[in-house]
Length: 277
Image 1 (tube, helix red, strand yellow):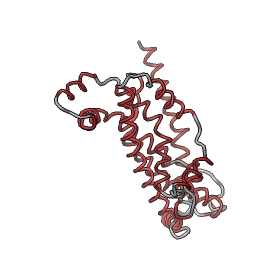
Image 2 (spheres, helix red, strand yellow):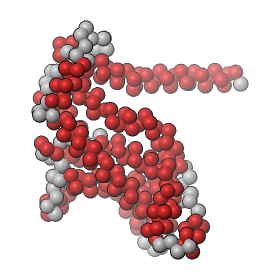
Image 3 (cartoon, rainbow, N blue to C red):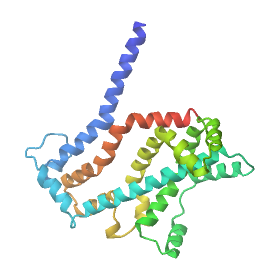
Image 4 (cartoon, rainbow, N blue to C red):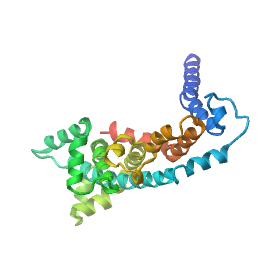
C-alpha cells in the first residue's frame, strides 16, 4: 500500500510540474510581457518589467484602428452565441430522432453524419452558394456555416447520451397526449443538461477560436473576428511585442473564464455521452 501511495504521489507531482510547464509558464510569459514597454518586450523573457505600462499598453491595443478589437469582440461573441444556440437545438433534435427511430434509412443517416465529421469543408462551392443566396459576408451566413461544421460531432454526443434515457419515458409521455415537439422540449431536453453543457463549452471554444472559416466566408474590415485581429496586429504593430501580447491576453479572457468555471461539467458530459453510449 505504501509503495502504491508513493507512486500516486509521484504521479501527482509530475502532473503538477507538467501543468506548470505547459500552461502556467506560457500564460505568465504572455501577461508579464504585455506589461512591459516596447524595448523591454523585445528580449522576450520572463523577467519582471522595470516599468509597468499596463494601462498604456491595453488602452493602445483597444484603440488601435479605431477600436477594431472591440468590434471584433462584438462579432465573435454574436457569432459564438447564435451558432452555439443553433447547434444545441438542431443537434439535440437530430440526435434524438436518429437514436429513437430505426428504419431502413437509419444506416444511411448515420453514415452521412460520420461522413460530415470526416469530410473537409468545400470552400469555393460554399462561397458560390452563399453568393447565389445573396448572404455572403453576412453574420447570418457565418452562423449557418459554424452550425453545419459543429453539427456531426454534436449529434454523435447526443446520440450516445440519449441512448441512456429509457424509451418507456417516451411511451408514457405519448400516452399522456404529448406530441413530438412537446415530448422533446418538455420531457427529453431537460434531461440532456450534462451533455448540453459539454456541447455549449466545447463548441463555444471552437467557434470563438476559429480562424480559417471567418477568413474565407466572413471577410471585410467590419466583419473581423478576434482571431483575425491577431493576424492584422502582427503586420501592423510590427516589433511592438508588448502590444501583441496584450491583445492575446484580452482575446484569451472569455474562453479562459468559460473553461475554468465549467471544466468539471465538460468532462462529466463527455464521459456520459461516450461511455454510456
